[in-house]
Amino acid sequence: DIVMTQSPDSLAVSLGERATINCKSSQSVFNTVNNKNYLAWYQQKPGQPPKLLIYWASTRESGVPDRFSGSGSGTDFTLSISSLQAEDVAVYYCQQYYSNPPFVTFGQGTKVEIK
Amino acid sequence: QVQLVESGGGVVQPGTSVRLSCEASGFTFSNYGMHWVRQAPGKGLEWVAVIWNDASKKVYAESWKGRLTISRDNPKRTLYLQIEDLGAEDTAVYYCARRCSGGACGLDYWGQGIPVTVSS
Image 1 (cartoon, rainbow over the protein chains, first blue to last red):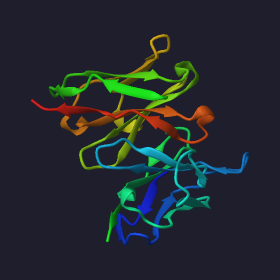
Image 2 (image 1 turned 90 degrees about the vertical axis):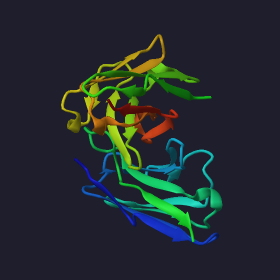
Image 3 (image 1 turned 180 degrees about the horizontal axis):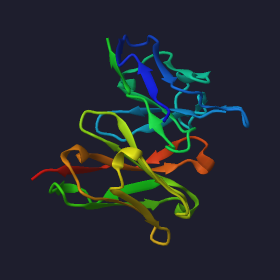
Image 4 (image 1 turned 30 degrees about the vertical axis):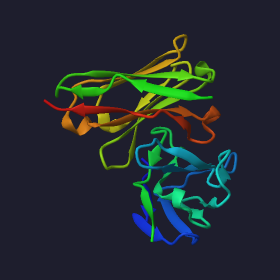
């Protein structure tokens, strides 16, 4: 199975500053047929279900603010929040949807807080 | 708008079974694969199972050791998850989630989740 490892487990960032979360997969999630990375990012606020933010490693879901961006390829990925807002306090998960089966595995999550 | 509403959870006795339901609306249910994902208290997300749009394929997380049955009733727009031989480790919030069309983006819509507490 593909194992997803996020770092750090938690981080505290000042309002308006950049937050960066890393995600590493134990094997590549890049599909050479369609040149896509099967990597998504989710945001989960307390008491709520996860919300899809980014897919194909860098494509923002409709309605997601452009301060959220994803990058990376193969096994190493990053989620960045360019200017942290109070409403961005949440746990963020990376997820691969490349392997078949299992169809989905998640990272352990990164908690983002305000410094 | 897309809505997924889980039901069937609650407090259940160890060693018994539970059947969770997820009623879908706002989209053509029969066109989409569906997942179950769970989250133990204070823990991360754990994928449980997926079923194809026409139920032709079902895949389970290996750790469940045959205790699961995922199914769906497309005319009723409802997804199900049957869990047998429940243990304390199954205490979690269970989410149903829609698989993106063609698997293009992971899981694009999630229900609010239904808590299951295994306790005597």
